[in-house]
Image (tube, rainbow, N blue to C red; front, side):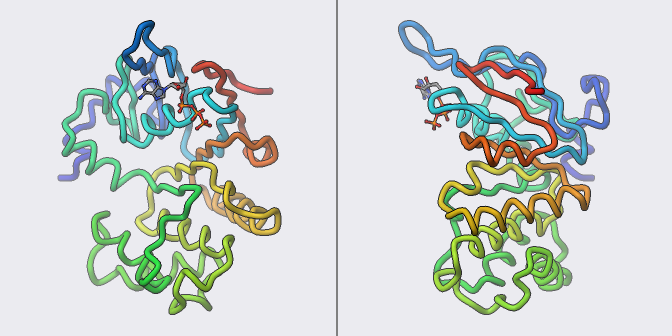
Length: 239
Ligand SMILES: Nc1ncnc2c1ncn2[C@@H]1O[C@H](COP(=O)(O)OP(=O)(O)OP(=O)(O)O)[C@@H](O)[C@H]1O
C-alpha cells in the first residue's frame, strides 16, 4: 500500500481531479506585527493544467513555493496534494508524498558537477519508487524527452545553461510526478536558453504533465495556459 492509499481521505478533497488544492491556506511569520506572507488563499490546479504564478519581490512567491513543495507548513488552512491532506501529516508522510508526487526545478539547476548527466538523472530515481530494473531505461527516456539523448555521458559543467536546466527537468520528470514545480526556471538563462526551456515546458504540457511555474518574469508567466498573480501575499487569477 502506498502513502497515497494510507493518507487519502477523499471526503476532504472537494475536487478529485485537482492535483493541487489550497483551501484557505495561509502562512504567517511571527513578528511585531506578524508578517502575513500568504493571506488565506484558495487555488485549484487540475491535472494537465499549466499555471504560472507571477509576483514582484517580496510578494510571497518563495513562501508559496515552500508550502506547495511541502518544505514548509501553513499556519492556517489545508493543502491537498494529489487529493491527500498534508497540513497535519507527519514529516515522514510529507517526505514520501513529496518524493512521489512533485518534480522540482530550481533557478540554480542543482546538478552534481562530478556526475554525468545520466547519473544525475538516475540519482533521482533512487527515492522515488522507480523499480531498480527500470531506472536506467527510464533515465535515458527522460533525457531523450528533453532532447539530450546525445549528452548522457557528459558532465553538466560542459553543457550550456539551457542544457543544464533541461537535465534538471529530466531529473524532475523521471519518476513521473503528478506536478512539476518550477521556481524561476529561466532566472539564470539568456534569452535563447530560456526559450529552449520554455519550449520544453510547452511540450511537456502537451504530453499531459501538470506544471506550476513561479516567476517574477512576465514573459515566462505569459507562456502558461493560466496565470495567477501574487501581490502582498494575495492570489488573484489573471484574465
Ligand atoms: N521567515 C520569515 N520571517 C519573517 N518574514 C518573512 C519570512 N520569510 C518571508 N518573510 C516575509 O514575507 C514576505 C514574502 O516573502 P517571500 O520571500 O515569500 O517573497 P518573494 O516574492 O519570494 O520575494 P523574492 O522574489 O524577493 O524572493 C516578505 O515581506 C518577507 O519579508
